[in-house]
Amino acid sequence: MDMHPRVLDYARSDIDQMIADESELTAGTRVRPGGSYGFFTDTTLCIGCKACEVACKEWNNLPADSIGLTGESYDNTGALSANTWRHVRFVEHAVRDDISTPFQSGWLMMSDVCKHCHNAPCVEACPTGALFRTEFDTVVVQQDICNGCGYCVPACPFGVVDISTLDGKAHKCTLCYDRLKGGLEPACSKACPTNSIQFGEVSELQKKARERVGRLHDLGVESAYLYGTPGEQGATGGLEHLNAFFLLTAQPETYNLPRAPTRPANRVAPSLAAGLAAVFGLAVAALGMFARER
Image 1: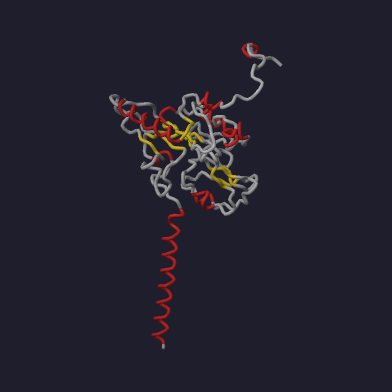
Image 2: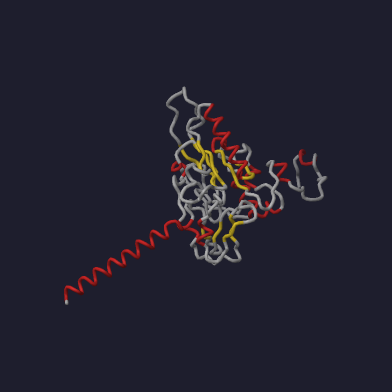
């Protein structure tokens, strides 16, 4: 087989075993059980290359989605699904109308992923325990326990979880749980060429994110803000915070993100109370009609 001359420069590897704590070399973070890990996605650095999508599919052996062009943009995958755990969203934005203001391009790019919510509604809704929180504070589906009931799908306020048509079970991003157990950085963030996707401990990422927003404001990008950090949009309704959060420059709806997501569990008590009140009201009305007839 013909090989490029550059390949011959490194014909053999001097490493005969996996590098211990490789994530410390690639992401500056040592992965340890008991820590809280996640992603900080800076959309101002995303160039829409989809390297994260490809890396995710290759590592997790996921089949292709929506083969062919949509005719809308280079975004042929369209959305997150059971087979697409990373999705780079292409959002056509307003054209430049004022040369005095900072301007990046006519497109907004965002690599979307499971948010690994601090209070994950999908975990609360799962009746079999297939969805669980790992020792790295991430949320994973155990395929051998999932019965495909689909309760997790409507429970997710971000529309992340999907039922596969191949095996009838729920699938979503695992934040590369298998790689974390081996001390490796998740495939998507490792493949990102612009460092738009940053992996690390959530508290450290939140600190970096706030500093980044401050720098962007100093540069004149007043629209920059965080989505999913404590007290901000995306961290509402009892979610507290998202382990995979974002820096955005447009309103959440622009990126197909809910402005104020909530946990369905919060609506159980009010819904039950409303139902009981309705039943009580019907009972009172029926008794009243019965009394009048007598």
